[in-house]
Every structure is written in structure tokens, then in C-alpha cells.
Amino acid sequence: SIFLILLGMGLYSCSKEKIAPLSQENVIPLPVSVSDIDGNFQLNGNTKIVSLGDAAQLNGVAEYLKSSVYSLTALNLSTAEQEQDNAVILELNPNSGLEAEAYQLTIDDKNVRIMASQPAGLFYGVQSLKQLIPAHGKDLNGTNNSFKISAGKIEDKPEYAYRGFMLDVARHFFSVEDVKHLIDQIAEYKINHLHLHLSDDQGWRIEIKSWPLLTTIGGSTQVGGQGGGFYTQEDYKEIVKYAMDHFITIVPEIDMPGHTNSALASYGELNPGITVPEQGALPYDRSNLGVDGMATPLYTGTEVGFSTLATNKEVTYKFIEDVIREISEITPGPYFHIGGDESHVTAIEDYIPFIERAQDIVTKYGKKTLGWDEVAHAKLLPTSVAQYWAKAENAIMAIEQGAQVLISPAVKAYLDMKYDSTTHIGYTWAALIELDEAYNWDPTGLEEQIKRENILGVEAPLWTETITTRAEIEYMVFPRLAAIAEIAWTPKNLRNWDSFSKRIAFHGQRWEAKGINFYKSPKVNW
Ligand code: TNX
Image 1 (cartoon, rainbow, N blue to C red):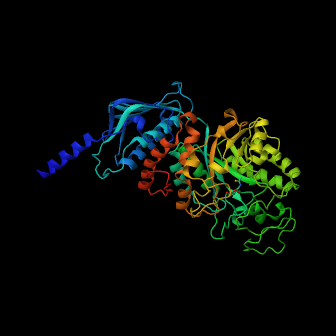
Image 2 (tube, rainbow, N blue to C red):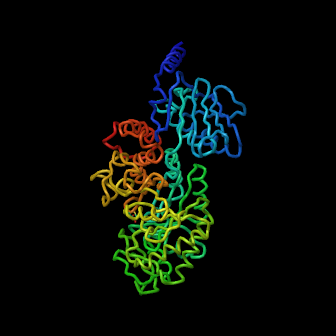
Image 3 (tube, rainbow, N blue to C red):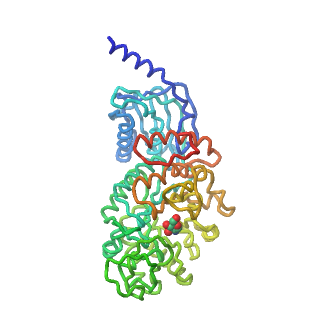
């Protein structure tokens, strides 16, 4: 019958389908080594997921694999206990000799096998595997589909331990759902730190139980005046947990002593008596603005560098200690970010002891201090990390003190910079950053004195003065974050713009299929 003929044609075209060898696939970040083997694995409705090793550590990754395969292919894979043919095998082997985040992915006619010594490595192996499944163009209604994956072997591990993305939720607030959605996307590029910029002049975004007005007043607005909002501590814990399930560590930032107007508007006793620029919104009666000890007006403009905590008052240190303690208690990751940037109205002789005291408090609550590069003016602990965004001389000062640096040069890594002069959102103060500009640099090539061993990793920040929606976030982040992720993961000598620009086109199709907004750079043949 016609039905059988059509079925036959379907099977024929399926088996004839040409697929690229593994080494020609579009994996981003590019793996360290890929070798080809003849043949291919057919992922189909009978493929099983087999976990070998400590179940408690494996279950999360196996679940993630199952749901990822389902959303890519509509195949609902079941799990099995025993090694067998037609299985994706997740093998957690602490004695494999593989480094912390490393993995091996082997594909042959019978099996896909991912081996790692830790769950993070398995998760990264799964990320690479997801990118090898040729899902689009298929009619996913048919669960009889099968998906060919070229045989071969990938051996992979990250160049840098810290691969970060920062989201400014202070200038504009973004919901827990928005953050989770972003976590889903950035995890695919093996990003392992999410830095949340939780406070700034325009808003305080995390509940502090001992200082409740920070959120009820300080969190009540944002740039432009509409909206605002904050995370309760329960919300924050939910983000931390969701991130952890995606092998992402949350790095909380409370910016101090500058960038603190939202705190000064909440508690006048923290205010040394400074003047707030004109745009201040005034929902409360604040008749003594800018007077020492009186609360300032809320601020909804976009200027920087006008606010400071009163560094000479003891109450300020009580305040920062309460804040650092409460947040540290609900933060499992090792870092607390104290900001420290653009404190233009704090005298340097006040700034230095303030940063040193903040660093001591962070240490007291069991965390390591991260700060923007200006913190290198203070005496840093060797465990502290300076985030190089503007001044190489600050980064070098940090290194001379034995601290490491996190590389986020505004001219290359700032995701709030416009792609070109026509980009409808974003800033231009540091640079215009086209996709090739975001890709073609290396952390070790910036300054002679910033050497490989001084570098903890790379982070791409997204400031949100001009960014108000999830779609706008996505537009600025993608595809550039994929470029930064490859800089952080793939050794310099393996990276190459021509190769990246071809591979990224495939990711554009994936983003399109998932409804992720992204910038169609003219440098790429999408
Ligand atoms: C500089 S980067 C800032 C931020 C702004 C950003 C806008 C840094 C440490 N400080 O406060 O949002 O420029 O691009």
C-alpha cells in the first residue's frame, strides 16, 4: 500500500542520511581533543540510560540527560541497571585519573559512554553530547525517530577553573524564573559561576532580615522608576539550588562602599551626607536630603560614583557584617563579592581601611573575597581575587600582593556593550563589541605581567541600565557568551575564529528552536 511505500522511503532516507565525522561537529566550547572512528550510534526510543557508580551523585545528571534528550528529540528514554548495547552510559569513576571537571565521551556503534571522576565532568560530557544530537529538521511527533551520532572519542577538560557570567539585577530587577531560564542556557556552554550583582544605587535586591528596610524601601524601584523587586532569602536559596543542579556556583555581590544609594535611602544612619543627582524619585518624605545621617532619596537614574557608606561610623561595620553574615549563611560557594568599584566620593584614605575591614568580615564568615580591580589599593589576602574590568595597573597590584585575578576587561567581555552603532540597547563607553571582537582575545595576552598562573578565570558581566526584559538579556548575551565560554574552556592554541564562526551557526538554529533571542551577527553565515 501507499503507506508501506512511504514508510520504506522514510527508512531509506533515514539510513542514507549523511552525517559529519565527530571532529567536524559544532561543539562549543571546542573540546581539547576529538578523534574520529568509523560508524555511528543510533539514538532511538529503545536507547537506555545506564548509570555506573555512586547513585546519589549520578541521579541528578541522569535525570538531566533524560529531560534534555526528551526536549531535543521527543524520545522518552528509560533507565537500566546493567551495561548493555544501545545505551548511553554515565560512568562516575573517582579512580579514572581524570581532573575535577574533565570527561571522556566515547561513541561507537553500540554505546555512548561518558566517563568522569566527578559529577561535574559527567554533566559537561552530557552538554557535549546534547550538541551532537542532530535534532532539528526532524518531525519530533514521531517517537520512532532515530538520531545518528558519529563515532569517535572526545577527551576534554577546562583551561580555567572559573568560567563566569554576571547579571546585574540591581539596575533592573529580574525574576527567579528569568534567572533559572538563564541558568539553563549558560550551563550549556559549561559556565560554572553565576555572579549576581545584588545591590546598587538603584536597588537592593536581597532580603536581609536584620535590616528589613533595605528591600521594602531600597528594593522598591529601579532604573526608570517602574517596578523594582527583590529576592527573599527563600528565593535566593531556590536560585542557589537550581544553579547547583547545573554545576553553577552562585557568587553574591553586595557593592560597597560606593554604589550604595539604595541602602542610604533605606537607613539614614549609613549616610555620611552626600548629594544625590537630580533624577531621584521621592515616594517618601525626605525633607533633609543629603544631610549627614538622613536618608537619601531613592535614585532611578544611571549615573555612577556619587554614593558612599559612612566609612567613619561604627554602625556601617555593624551593617556590612550583618549583610555579609546573612548572605554567607545561605551561600554554599566559596566567594563573597564586595564590589569596591567607582567609589569616587570615598577618600582613598577611607576606602583602603574600609575594604580591608570588609575583607576581614568576609573571612570571618568563611568566604573568600572577590572585588572589582580597585580593591587592589587595599592590602589583599592571598586568597582574595581582584576582578580586572578597567585598570591593568590595579590587576597587577593585586598580583604583586599574591592574589589572583578574574579577567573581565570591559573592552572585550562586557555584554552590555553594543555590537555595533545600530544596536538598540546597551552602552558604548568601553567599546563596540562585535562577535569576532568578543572571541579574538586571550586572558594571557592582555598584559605581560598578567600570566596564566595569576588568572583564576574569565567572566562576562551584563550590566542592565538599558536592559529591561528577558528577550533583551538574551539578545546581548547570545552569541557573545558562547565566545567568552570558549575562551575560558578551550586552550588558546586550539581556538580559531573561522572554526568558531562556522560552529556558532548551528547554535543559532538551536536558539531559534528554543525561542531564545540572539543577535544575528553579520560576521556569521547563519
Ligand atoms: C561600570 S563595571 C560599572 C557599572 C556600570 C557599567 C556599565 C563596574 C565595576 N562598574 O556600575 O553598570 O560600567 O557599563
